[in-house]
Length: 538
Image 1 (cartoon, rainbow, N blue to C red):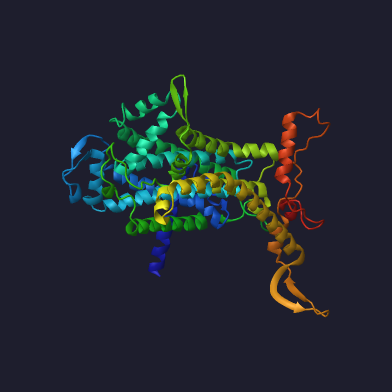
Image 2: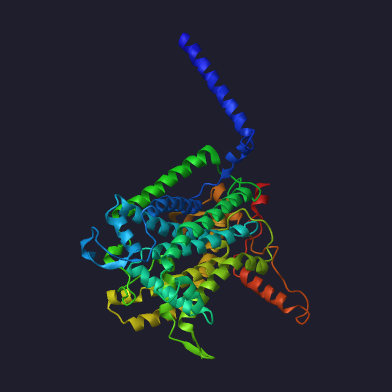
């Protein structure tokens, strides 16, 4: 009895202390006002985890990066190595390369942290790229999320720059070859190329300032920008609410899923430890970037079979595919074989990424808000464009290793280069047409399942002696998803009305593009569908 009274008094004191603490904090911070935020719903689907994987990889990058800064010396001062790695004993090298060797062989756990940092960078960029593809193929960039799409593309661009800066810091032979290529790209810029190179390297190549400047970018400026944009991106996700897949009870006016606290936070915390554990496992068993095998960078030596990290491999491939075109204009040599693949191509690529949401809105005339994800098959043109872009990237990435492929399979490098050149021109339109046809075929299959039901695999003989396959009706959830797909004749479709000479040229172009965009779509039969998820819900 006495124990119960003491327990009750202790509980009362604890509740009183919690109330006082809550009142104290709420008087200075919006604690109670954020209670509704903790109940915010997050849809549950595996494709939404790609953004979280990118976020948690970035957290690992920050943690390991802070640790590495304690031991790395970003200096190009020449020193003589007398460390633990005997094959390089007495070799002249930069202080940056020597400190990287010391981290790998003399600092306890240094090699593991170095490799963890590198693997996390590769996964970070891969997760951002896949996340952008998921957003593109599902139409999650449309109103009201255009700004978040622009932020995501900017994050990917900054992550590329951050990865290249970190990749170049050890000043080994492989990263030095990459810096030499970067200097050649700078020189290819007409008129100002020489000045850009002199400014970046602090004088004639290789200069004395490139490593310290890359170090400042890598640990201060670029991470700060990434942190700021990630924060804005997450704030917009909270404010605009998360997209979700079509289903019963899910409309453009609500969000159905797990509440942020405690279900989503518990699951997301588990995902963080899974990502951290997977990265640590790869870092422990899969060697990456063994700089001691390459040796220190020398301007008169190029590493054999050098291959950059995957995220800049497409630039390497584009440089290898363009023929040696040069033009002399007023005494200045314009190197098209470097300018086109390394300056114009990336510029066009990111310009298209930034502009696509607005171009699609202009073509389709669709200004409605969209909170439900599209299935890729329901937008054959958009899906075809995405697959064509992926095939183009794949060709360039493979072309970046044409020497390795030629050596492995014992074929001519010149022949292989021409194969990649032809594939770069032929494969993207072919991929677009095939993907578009596959999407239309999948729409027709969905329509057939909706009208006839799902095949059971049973075949029965009819009275007339023929054979007939058996079907069973779809469940209500599946029928809901199929009926909620985008209508074949959207109300926002752009038309050019009037005589040919009276309609402005831009409107005629827009009408033709709109007809092309909506052209090859399976038209639902009368009564087969409802117009939207909202009407189905009503």
